[in-house]
Length: 437
Image 1 (cartoon, rainbow, N blue to C red):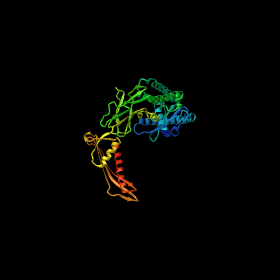
Image 2: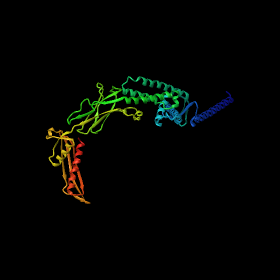
Image 3: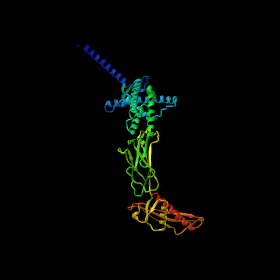
Image 4: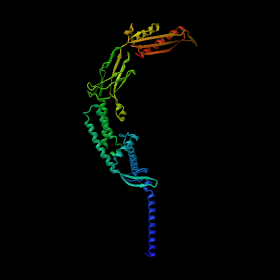
């Protein structure tokens, strides 16, 4: 090879290297330059477009999935904004069927539904930024999305119609839960514009479900096994105490109940007996009171979805009254005040006095000590005293043991003031005892 050829070869190699480096620099500069869709959110009349980015930390696939999810979330937000604007226009033009969906619940519904509806999305473009981020451009055809929504809604409407027509063989509570499930299926479609031609049918079904549940509530009744139960001081409650549930005149034992009582000392509990169609109630204690206690069984609507709890429909209920006869009592303290108190309680039918502790269900003891002196203040006599009251149940169980100061005033004489303290003490002792009985 001549020297000339060697020089030509060297020159050619140098030119090629220069061209290669130049192309590499241009290609690198092109790659480092962000595409327009990264800088500015693109808009399309036919497609939803979402842009998402994620830092490439470990594996590239992790960043890719994260960026695509963020792009899909961006599309969901665009759909929500579009739906809100349509809903506002619909509310302004239609005063009768205003949508009552709250902003937060609608956001959750749209987001969850659109994610499940993203079956035809496409990743149109990607870009790796020099700073180590993966960018994804995702598009979703608007007509395809609307067709998907309408197709799913038509399928859902068919399911709800089957629920409405096919639930008559269920027990009444399962029927209510089935109708609530049908309503929840319809509620996942929060926008009138996407419902299209099937929107009217879905609204009719929602109203029909509301009407049916309200009618079921009206057809449920609870009849007590005892309208009024009178018990002696030592009688036990009957095993058959409770209510029987009816739906349209037929017994039903599927209904959940909530028990309440007019006296806080009564703690009712119990569950339905399938054999007897009765909801029994077990009273942990029936206070020995002559005051009537009303025990009420109410349909437990708290087990329904929040939407129906907010309806404030009148829940069916049934109630009965328990009355305890006056309790036999023995007066333990042998003093004037205790005998005065016992006699007053007997006159009020609160207790029945007996002669021995063995015949008594309760033992009452009390004492009242008047002050030795009476104070005179601004021409008014003021007398003080100390009251103590003790009540024991059979077996020595202490029910109450209180000690209170008593004061009375009189403007005429000290004797009247002292007499007034005794009257105040008797009234206070009666109130203390009757809070138990």
